[in-house]
Length: 286
Image (cartoon, one colour):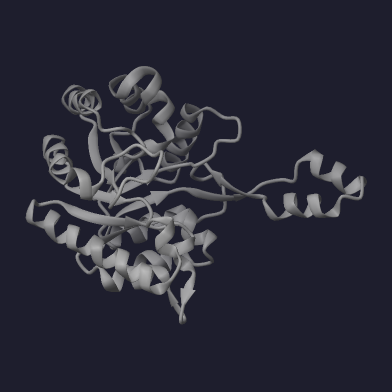
């Protein structure tokens, strides 16, 4: 049975302010009992507090984020520079899943560079498999660009058979595909799903002011940018069907995430997603 947890990218400010342990205490008090670590430096202190949170209130560290090479200005370990440390951290935290959040921007330039990235990732996936750890790839919308009629995500999957998938349903929808059918397509190699809703927001009053002033281009910019991230259940995605298909596909973790909060606190957003998922009948997955 899959477990619903939280993607810690949402919590990075809290990690900085009060530390990993106190942040995850708040997560646990809402009712979430699993966390995916992302955009959080895996310092000795943070690793120790993650370990402590597991022991003191049973927080499951579902997965850790890695990159092939550390992107400039972003925290995190890379498989090229920190392979042994990553394995040690994962084993200390009893974490069997690692995830690559995105292919390097430079790898998006051509089909050749996409294939090169995928093959290199596959080599690390094979090395990690020898350690009892799986490597997974997380999509955005860019992976549904087509090269010679084939989705980039399919090209990555074909050239990295040892690497699994972490499907983000918001980005699948923003890429123009149906999340349920996409999860079904990758059944058997998808261990993690990001639960992130897709909302069409309302035009701000300022947009109509632009229109009244005759600034049609500025108004159209506002018009085209009404797609928003949303708390689970507050947007347009069919989460009962998504979660049902995720479980059929073999997902181990369903991770709540919201990239932008639009004035709400992270704790308000997580509470709303929790309440809505409970109301959908998924109490037993927490």
